[in-house]
Image (tube, rainbow, N blue to C red; front, top):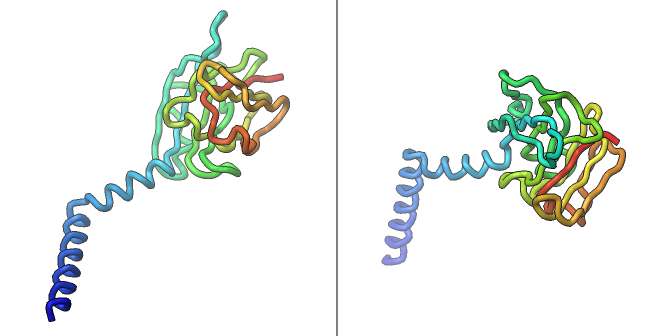
Length: 174
């Protein structure tokens, strides 16, 4: 008899807790926060490299959630799509478009001395666009310890030896 009452009270307490969490949004907020991180899509617009610079200046950085959000671009800045980073293999998961304010890639290209906290050690695949056809990925910020190089490519999965390890990156036209 005691066990039945105890089970009944435990089940009731669990049901009440779940109902309170659902009504207050605590339970759904936690689930939404986890989902938002995996489906977050961003757009970064970079300025062209100035003489003597090795890092492109970020002109804007916007993020939204949902599959269609990767197409969102700041209206105030005209830019050219250079590349897209993906969190998962085969261009899947969260993504970030990298755009250039001065057109496509040239021999100087665009440099990322640090890909940012959202993407550090997280890039698994990418796609290049327009005149961008070469990429170097580095294990450390400030272009330290090159671990990936693709001379003339359009995009691909990052090889297992560099997957989820890139901290800085350079993209240009060969």
